[in-house]
Image (cartoon, rainbow, N blue to C red; front, side, top):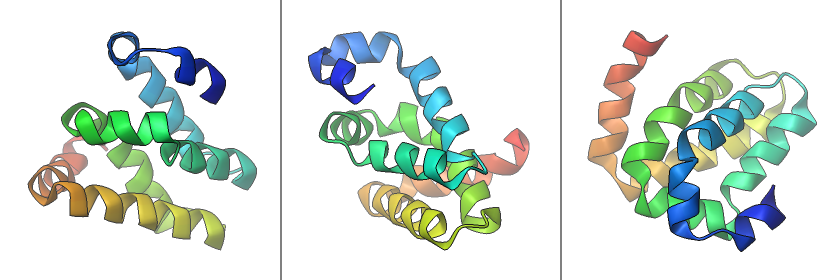
Length: 109
């Protein structure tokens, strides 16, 4: 996926952002630690991280439930740590949006 995303323009990623980030969120919540870990590393990929930064209002609401779940319930400490770091990144990037996602989460769950 990383290699494909490196070839895509922002406009192309924007066209598929919902299913893309839903798939990433689903992988983040995987109980298989390597799948979850890889998905979290993908969030640190320059393309994904840049897109998430520029379009955080679209990305965070999709990813937040998975991040919240991992932070509270994932059995693997490394996955929990990576999850915490991604959550912290979003919080520092836009604390208002983060708090809004936090408040909306019970409605989604």
